[in-house]
Amino acid sequence: MFSDYYMPVRVLSGKDAVLVNKTVFTKYGSKCLIVCGKSSAASSGALDDIKKVLNECEVECTVFDSVTQNPRTADCLNAGQVARDFGVEYIIGIGGGSQLDAAKAIAVYAANKFLSADGIYSEESMLPPLPVILVGTTSGTGSEVTGISVLTNESGRKKSVSGENYYAKVSFADPKYTYSMPFGVTVSTAIDAFCHAVESMLSNKAGEQSKMCSVRAVAPLWKAITEMHASNELPDKATRDELYSCSLFAGLAINLTGTCYPHTLGYTLTEDYGLPHGMACAAFLPSLIKRALEYKNAEAAEFLSMINMNYPEFERTVFSIVDIKDISMTKEQINSYCERCQSVKNFINSPGGFTAADAKAVLSELFLKNEGEEN
Ligand code: NAP
Ligand code: ZN
Image (cartoon, rainbow, N blue to C red; front, side, top):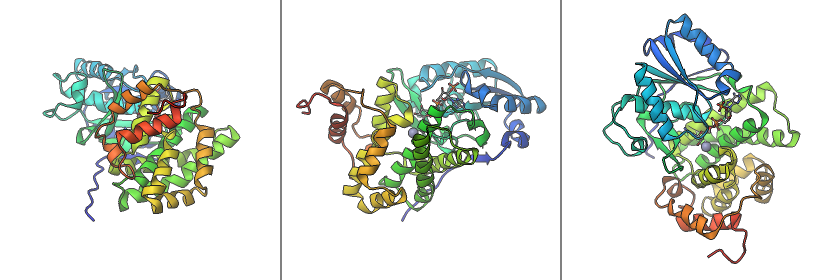
């Protein structure tokens, strides 16, 4: 079978990875822009470590700390201008998926002065981005190892952009920066990683290499998620280290296969109902497994045996963790969401090949509260 494995990021992982790999920071220039959010870069300790190392290496830095969750293309465009104004030679992104994805996009805007905000999705003749170094602080998205940036466009819709321009040069993966995540963020980012592993495992594009990565992550993530849910407490440090490793394996898996329809439909729950990304995607996992039992029975059965559950138990457990009972949609809303779903890659790669009509059925079953309005 034909396979194409491409993952050009140097990943430096383990305790104090930033502090012991100083030379990385002099490799891409002597002036950089640090891209982060308001609090997590500082509370995780990552910003202090980075500043210390930059100071020791005599690399000048400017901090741009206003990257919000679900970063907008227009804000990244403005940050690209800031990078040009300061004449920086490379970008350091510190944070969760939001900041890491923003850093990737800012590096593209900084190098392409004439790009409009949403032009990032369509412009073909772009100059290469500034080099990017990433420092992860959540155990979820795997953005450290993917050539993907998920941005919110000027219409307020989440849309990803991917390819050669969206890989970091180097990613630091030190789990100590994830220890400051509060309980809710720890659970929802672990669920995001779990969705990546499951969606990749069941994707029509799954192959030997992607399966090695997805299968590595499924069972430990599910164990940690269900134990956190049962105890209502953060796990011990060894488990949190394992969560970070699993998020990277799951990231490697989706970098090969992409995700399935739970990610596309999940975006609507984040945009319009404020559900954290991981929870939003997980709302569609039971329907994915049901569909896989029909179209990819061996893989779905393998998945259920890995987590030691049958389908009804899995569905019940997911909906005890992911609370969607207050979300309701009108028929018009569902139709408008489905209009966005024509020829989406994630749909085509889902078991059985998912269509806009399938999306309508899934959304109606979960969220159309007024019975009799399904058609
Ligand atoms: P996030 O949106 O980056 O962060 C969520 C919250 O957690 C923020 O309030 C953040 O605070 C806080 N936080 C992060 N790290 C922390 C830490 N160590 N200690 C305390 N608080 C911390 O969450 P995420 O789930 O990592 O990223 C979600 C985004 O990634 C979405 O936009 C999603 O679409 C995208 N995504 C990207 C990929 C990819 O391959 N590129 C894959 C899946 C998802 P601050 O605001 O202060 O930072
Ligand atoms: Zn995700």
